[in-house]
Length: 212
Image (cartoon, rainbow, N blue to C red):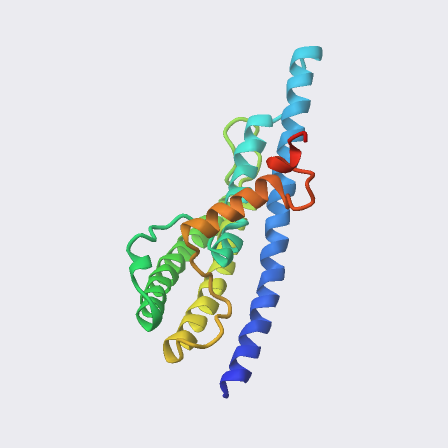
């Protein structure tokens, strides 16, 4: 397979997996929104009508599992996860991609183990009818999302390993399906832009907002 064909195939797979990751991230966001609404309803019911929401504590504990893991692959895709980069930043070129590739291989192994054990926990909860202690709500729907989210993350890690292999072969190739490290200035500029937006139109804060 030529490098251009390999790059095109990797880019297509990356886009398709991105769609799945974005859908899971949206589901996590909707779950968080739903929990906020449930919390508001629970407080109003408790304070105004002395009628707290049925099973509120159990529902929160179950849905927390879903939104905690559903967006993990999307964070891996954009490099938004927490990791130690002080050591990795010292490398350049092919050596950097080799270190990143080895790190991804370790992550794939760890996630494969976690997928196995989270899957067995899900099957055990489904077969035994495991439920919460208070309201006896089945726990298997909550446990189901963990191996699903971890499986998507493994797919992302495999694509990243493929992307790093391309860069190991040719460090001058265009990076595809791999997160790139940014220096301190770039990270600061991005955070400022996320917080205040584009200030070039003079509508934001700064000197443009000062009276003349």
